[in-house]
Length: 376
Image 1 (cartoon, rainbow, N blue to C red):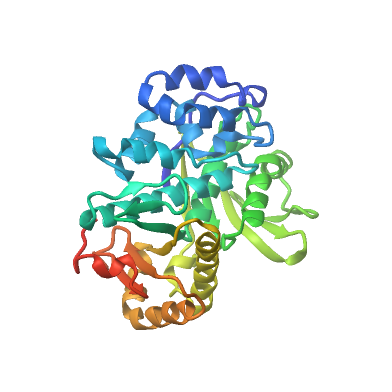
Image 2: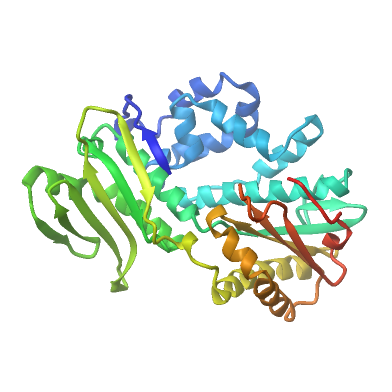
């Protein structure tokens, strides 16, 4: 979130799937081309992704900003001994029908890489596995799952908005100078896909009606409700097709006041990270992760133990720290239904309240063997 610079170079919608432009830029970094070239090519050429620029890495290649992708990967795993592990991780990225799913998969790998850095501090010989778990050391196999940061939905929406403003035909999109994202509480695939589809397929028409016809209010059935709040601001609510009273996304848009190519994207102060993590939400997410680990444990040829990450947004860190006993109680209760060893790690992100990961382990899981103070 923050100030974004809209690319001055737009792309016709008919050319957004043409790989040649992306490929010519990717050749400037041979290692990135080796690691990601085929996967990016698949995403770009996939016509089921109506605008592949909504995937951050695809947009960065198209905009000749390869150094940002390089920074991402360098922050995941560093040192020559980890390049093979990195290649194995990236090979897990698949074909997706929605940019949001691709972003979620990339985020999952980022979280897994954070786990690798923690485990490597105590187990230098740890390596990436090809089957039956994600990481292994001294005969132990560890399956890593992460409760993904809740602000991921906001980032996915932001990338979709940037992609919307990059399409040449979307002339009204580039007349917007400020966007406020409000209450994007959706964390499931279907709702995220609907938000992205609305931005890509419908938002230009809504803005055109607002700016072009000067309507003071209006409604587009089954897609969104919108009304002009002030002379220069539009409110948009994307509704759930199954329940018109439920909004899966809300945003405000404001017209530019100058010829700048800058656009501000912000979150409303009422978004999730100002509120404590609820026990019900955490239980639901932990159960989803533990169920997946149990499936791997039961069908694998080797015993597998679990590792579950919970990433803590800096604005939520104090609430987590103040309620640390309650969160541990939720984790302990969730583990009562499972028989395999498992570690839980609370990862603080850029926080001055929580500065080190907190690891809880059950049934002799590998977390018990980690040093008491772990620095990322």
